[in-house]
Image 1 (cartoon, rainbow, N blue to C red):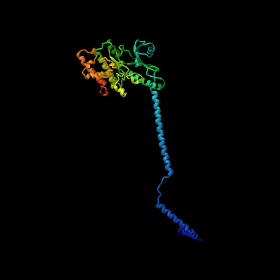
Image 2: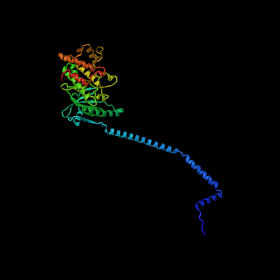
Image 3: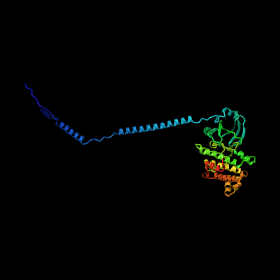
Image 4: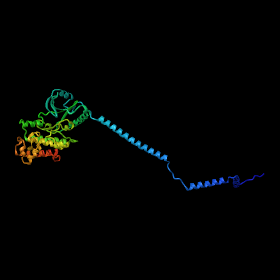
Length: 398
């Protein structure tokens, strides 16, 4: 029997007829319509991309964590750097030394300690300290200045800081080398004081020399006095212009100007008055007026003190003399000299023992003018130490 073959199209038509006969027509039509609507909806409306709210919150948390982490790391790094720096500064700080610190090969620590422990000749005792004459075992004669600037008790920590600062400055002062400066040969730090060791100068200080002049026990001519003035100002020029950083004396007066056998001056106690608060500074007769008005001290303060020293050399009068408290004298050595100079009577203020030849008298009167300029109330009107060396050297050949 021959089998019938149906084409595919016929088969599809037959299947559709069967479905229609069983009542599936509405479902098919509905499916077709819904498919058509969905397709048209997808084709006509494309949804815009939007970030869910929980993703924004997570992103903010991540950024905040990163910022806090960076800040924490930077803070920790800064704290660590500060700690390391403090440790380095603590390890590198100058230790507080005990016993002798020697700067001269001629002095040994044991010899110096032995000499300080024995009885020494007291030379001067005042508010600046005590000066002793000491002979070491090797025959070297030195001058020892003992200071007691420190207090105990509640200021112990402050005293340690002051002692360390003083040690650093003393080491710096010991490195200074100039013919018109006293050389610091050694120092000894004890529990509550420092002992400074200098070369011994048998002539003593300018104050000692001028006292002998006032008592007619010593004759100092104009040439010697001018040499002393030039030496003092050369020492100041070295401190003000050749030392880096600049060193100010702070306490320049005749007791701190030592004289050698040839009356060549040497400045002592350079800068110590700044370091030691209990050390007596220059008396009111030698201190610049701005030091009392605003407590400011510059190199022009040293120039004012030098002007007083030059006035003492010219007149042999002590600035603390009661004579200068009288209204007729103007109240000070500087005002007295200024008054006499303006009146053309500067010669009346001079020490008569230095008046000699006519040429020297002209030099002396010019020196009076220089002293008056140095004693000006305004620091800007005073010359510098460099200018003073030239001005004084022109008065006489050195």
